[in-house]
Image (cartoon, rainbow, N blue to C red; front, top):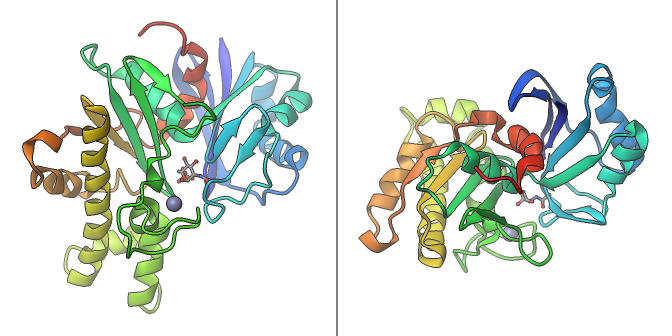
Length: 291
Ligand code: BMX
Ligand code: ZN
């Protein structure tokens, strides 16, 4: 069965045609302005017209808090959805196909769980990208909580003297570690401004650049140890553009190894690589089935 998978991030939207649990074709484009759900749905469908006809269903993974009513932003600085944004309904109306929707990191957590060894029952997926997102699997089930908020670990407040977060709290992991936070800090230090990809390259020789990346990795390590203490996870899976950048995971691992044994937790790179959230968009249909 063909599934049209859509992954909506703060910066880009990835779409894929998924057949037999694999992406057979893939496209991406910048996230359009979020104003009207119908126009937003139309903009996505324009990029996938040729796939809509052959797809039986649409799976969406999106940044933001997902409820039956629609999507709303926890941190409007990453993507300012006018809440609740009824995108699933708009996609269903436009295409006539059934639509399922999950938070991006929750969807990726489920996908990664289906790919990991059978001894793993409790795990988290963390994406370090425009924001910092997360999804939690407890005893083999995706835990989304009463209103779908579970897994929003980017909003663990870890430094009372830290930077303001767009969610309204202070010192959130996302405000310290995300791609957006890294870029903000980098823009304060380097002129002319450089991209995050250039910053990672520069960090090989420039201690100030290294310090920015190290601060991000340290915040993610703190988050991992806090999650271990809370949920006694078997493993944490890391994804996202920053999370998968060369040398980032070893930096996080190094920081975790400096913590007391009890709070250390293995951390591995996402099997779905940069497409963990996109694969998750399609895999949410298999959620009730066993692994
Ligand atoms: C934010 C929040 C999460 C999301 C995470 C990663 C919004 C709009 N998003 O914490 O729901 O999972 O960012 O999002 O409040 P990404 O765009 O970086 O993939
Ligand atoms: Zn926050």
